[in-house]
Length: 178
Image (cartoon, rainbow, N blue to C red; front, side, top):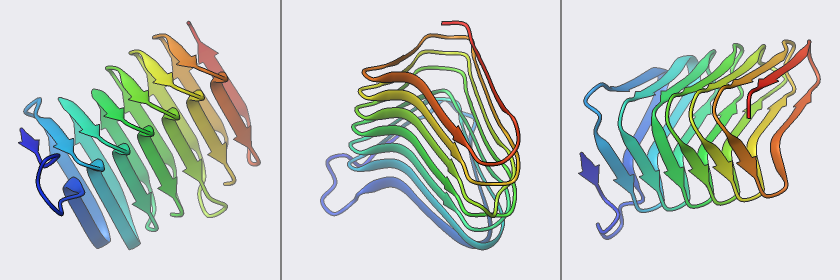
């Protein structure tokens, strides 16, 4: 694993940047801990942004922070914890935003925050574990041309809302078991 939470000047355990597509994969169940951000990924200009983790990702503010200006943005994660946001995604790209989690996602404000801009298409969130946010468990905003699909089979909890979704594109579909 990697832990930069006590390293002076280090804000993110991984600070990733590209102008032509970016892919980060951890198949080793690593523990990734950053002072402010566990994984910070920024893809400008073109290509897809993809983050896949199988272990625990923790950050003082953001567990995973992903900003995409290319095409598709996808996050596949196990356990993610952030002091403010567990997973925070901004997709200004021309494609879809997809988040899939299998473990717990916890944030002081929101467990998962997903924003898809007018340039994007569909926004899809699938969770099978526990999701918690101090204000909202899952927040999904799609200004793009497609729809929102949210499917949860684990418990989703928020101090104000469990799931909040706003869609300006196609259909809005939410399937929640708990």
